[in-house]
Length: 222
Image (cartoon, rainbow, N blue to C red; front, side):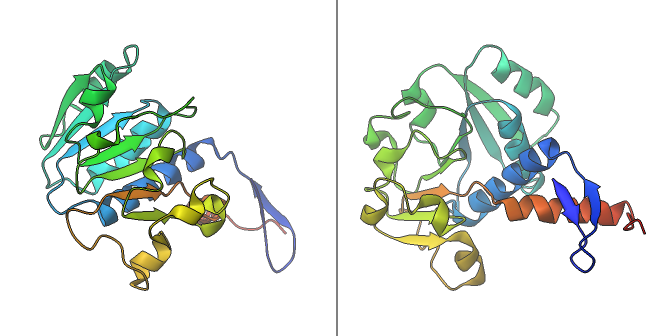
């Protein structure tokens, strides 16, 4: 990312965004989860256990240190075991590893998908999505069968989802910013099934970069 001074037009910094993009993606996903989950949510199911999943876990756990959380991990190579080893020091967090989609989805309060590619649907049987579930496809793929049957779809930006095949069939749509401002309804009861396409914007990258430069007391070179 090239950061410019808006007054002079001069370039302030050239910033590598690998860390920033992963971190802000985890942060916005955690905000969506904390805002839209049911009140007694405890079981959080993860599929796709790479860098983004770890960033979601970091932000989710950091904002729920006093809440009991059961993290359910869909097995992939040795990734689940590595995550358990990395996060086992949190006393409020427990882990289970599952091997099938049915075990992954059944009775989950929050479903988080961090896979970067999906051919077809991840959970074909929509009956596995219990009342009150929140589904967060961080990379938007694999849950199109939820688009038309879930009570609400919340996204970070209208432009991200208006081109989706089933957008016109969403039962209810709102941007998360309007939910946070109180302009639109988020979760209204613990039986609503909600789909959150909240994956973050380029504006978040700029905001993160600006804050990092502020902390470094970085000055625009003359």
